[in-house]
Amino acid sequence: MDEMRHIAFETVMRACGFGSLAIFCIMVGLSFEPRLSFQSGGLLMLIMVGVLAYKAREAATKPYRRTEMWMYVPIELRPPEAFAQLVVSRLMRETYLTFAYWSALLALFMLAIALLFAVIGL
Image 1 (cartoon, rainbow, N blue to C red):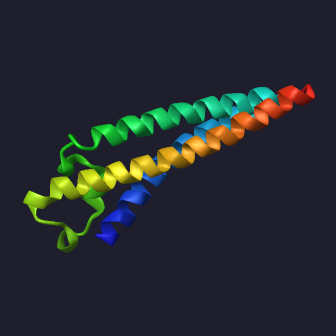
Image 2 (image 1 turned 60 degrees about the horizontal axis):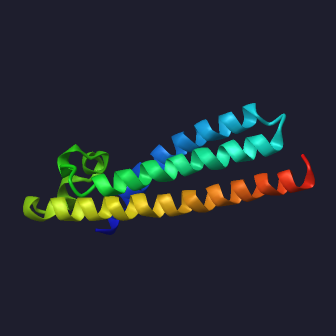
């Protein structure tokens, strides 16, 4: 079970890493205006939170054999088919919600920095 949790964490982390890279590139492109850069980064992170929350909701109905995590789980560690849907959907939901929480905290941090720049007049 811990191995499956680790694999779920890695697959969601990879997807969030690509999304964060895109957000970072946009922020670098707007670096001439720091307030706008952090504001856009915070808003894009909130969009990521929405996508992760949607994926967490969708995890309960998605067939476990069609998840990326299932492909990486070694055959000897896979649970029985009768139990697999429940295990995979709960692990993926938990993982998506964990990353949504972390992304929301990061979005809040970026928006607070944008507010600070607005207050000091940048």
